[in-house]
Amino acid sequence: MPKSKTIYICSECGHDSLKWQGQCPNCGAWNTLEVKILKEPRAIFKAESSPGKPENLSNIQIKEFKRIPTNISEFDRVLGGGIVPGSLILLGGDPGIGKSTLLLQICDKIGNYDSSLTSPLYISGEESVQQLKLHADRLGMKHPHLQIMSEVDIDKILVTVEQLKPALVIIDSIQTMYSEDIPALPGSINQVRIATMKLAQVAKSNSIPIFLIGHVTKEGVVAGPKTLEHMVDTVLYLEGERFSSFRILRGAKNRFGSTNEAGVFEMTNQGVKEIKNPSGVFLEQRQIKIPGSAVTTTLEGTRIILTEIQALTSPTSFGYPRRTASGIDFNRLQLLIAVLQKRAGLALQNSDVYVNVAGGFKIIEPAVDLAISLAIASSLKEKIVDPELVAIGEIGLSGGIRSVNQMEKRIKEVSIQGFKKCLIPGYADVESNIQIIKAQTLNQAIDLALR
Image 1 (spheres, rainbow, N blue to C red):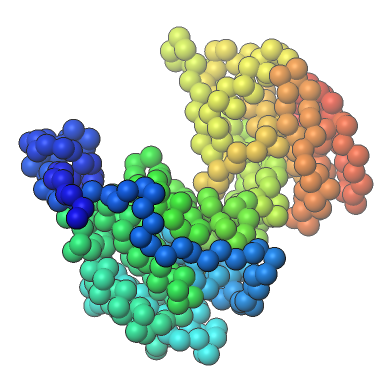
Image 2 (cartoon, one colour):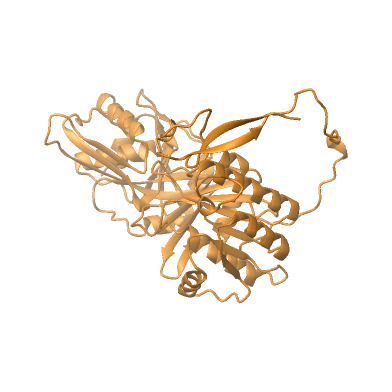
């Protein structure tokens, strides 16, 4: 007969200890250690279970499956073409960013798009059914068969899902779910892990796609154990400034598609609205006759987006000049300022430098280096950058301009958006119906771009 032993488990973080303590040594909470009796594991080499039956990979037949379109092209783009049946998708984002609104609209779109599907099921642990009804009415939802439920007991939810077999399940949010089998509070590591594991089993066995809404920490990552992101098939993040109307949907993990795609949305009074031409939206309010502005391209998956880089320089009021970056990497800004001082001879050592990407967009690729440098030089010299010009290129420490990938595709998008000129590295070999201006060094680029 297997032996048993007594341990103490923290109901807040799941930390286990061999003896009771007033304060959890892991999370610091008081009076949270609860007793639990565990059975000793069986001997490692004792084969009491029947062996599994592995299959040869070449003999496995893939069942044909059809992705479920959400009828929101920007969302389908990020997922890789639609929702895969049986997949577990985690959506994270800051409070108030629009996670619940977006998924409510997806439930409505799916029901109206394909009447052959069974009704979606929206389960909330944060709102009552009356509050969900008010939310849906505000969005103008017309789908009469959407089912909603307010519940936090994960075991009741699993029984309901297996009985109804809905086309789609939304769990809002995973941190509010709990199981009575786990001696811990909702939102603790053990509760989140077990709830996700049970939902994954139901999703795979019944081919029901399940969306999990996840809270995020102040660092911007999904709250709970890191294993949560390993357990799901797809991890999505909805980003954007709280007081800006634009939202960016990115994929951090996707077993059924690329993680390089991004969807662009706008938050309106009627909910989340997709933006199919982000370049036009980000550039529509650009002021072309003011120094400190330059246009560039950024690559988001398979899409080219034109965006405006804004820069402002002003005499520093303190001994150490201030540098501020919004939408670009701060260390990258420091590097470009050093190159502008050393290679281009700009006197920035006594100037504060502020750089911003218009529209709240975040850019991480080096193809925007040239536009950032031109915007800073434009502000310092009080000369405007040619308003019909788009700058593309990476800046090296030597002051040279390096080529970037997919240059022809970028220039094609520049032409589509109505720009007449494109400043690119001198080593790039491309042809276009717009004027191509080449520069090999940063000094040449500044002379060619500034008026």
